[in-house]
Image (cartoon, rainbow over the protein chains, first blue to last red):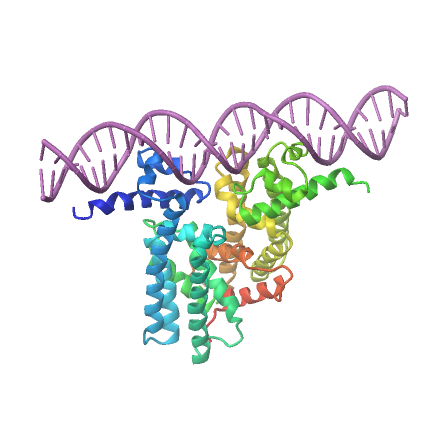
Length: 194
Length: 194
DNA sequence: TAGCCTACCAAGCACTTGCTTGGCTAGCGA
DNA sequence: TCGCTAGCCAAGCAAGTGCTTGGTAGGCTA
């Protein structure tokens, strides 16, 4: 294989990501990671500078992909409601494809954000807020969404509900991420009453 | 004061709760707690057996109060829709009144649940699920809620949205917990479209 | 005033943490 | 065959971790 050089690194990153997602960043030791990889802890430092640089790499590469998808939606020509639906679907898809990364971001962003190195996490948060608020305001302006809503609050509810789903969503389970997105959009758009 | 004996203990618990909520349980050291209280770390062990017993006390007493409230709603004579609304309101109220406790439960339940001592956390989770599913099924049966909903999924969405609000809700802020509950119920019950 | 209790300090122990250092080995291109 | 690199090990250090121990000061009560 041509990418043999990269492979071991990426393999270790995947192992680390799963542990970070499951046990938390601070709660995962370099010995845990090394054990799971079948090597000694010191050997990790042949591949990475520090434990921090591992999460850094995991999170930043994921964020880049996700925000590329959002940008594509915003730049598209769909009507506001379709764009909003697309953003929700893309998010649930991210949970399906990048379970560990989403979980790490959800659980550790606050803590990691206190370090200079992870200042970009706050920027991404702001960027995400801009995306959703833009979509919601376009929706209200176009008449597709109710005018009596507190757009900021709606944004928070959507963001929370979508991302926290990573806690219970099972990638190979009975419900696909399409199913989950469908059900959530039904509730969000039309409510649960008859 | 008659409760002077209890006061210092409770004061220390409050200090610990705030740190656990902000920095995480594992990420908070006994020296952190002691520093915040203005004493040395060893002195904490005059009041408590261990760091674990501190979270234990914090969480269990909170849970008892919360589930008492749920039980009251279930036992009431309101119609299904009113009961559902009441459960949502009680939850947002808990976020307002017990910020730290809710945050700790949200962030640490998974990790703590792996210890025998905190097995009751899983029981409480199950109990909570029963409460919400009962309310939702009564709603569907009465005709107040749509029949095409996946009740289990709706439960998860509600649970997540309500409790994760602890991450951004500001107790003394512009929006009261009543306001937040109102807005969420509007969305949940009737949707965001026109 | 003697005995007891609450609240704390000072010191440190046993262990875990992230990370470092120096060295080994297998494979590959020249 | 030589040098180079990727990948790993063995050993350990400095800082931090939860918790223990023996002791002190002040107040309450019999």
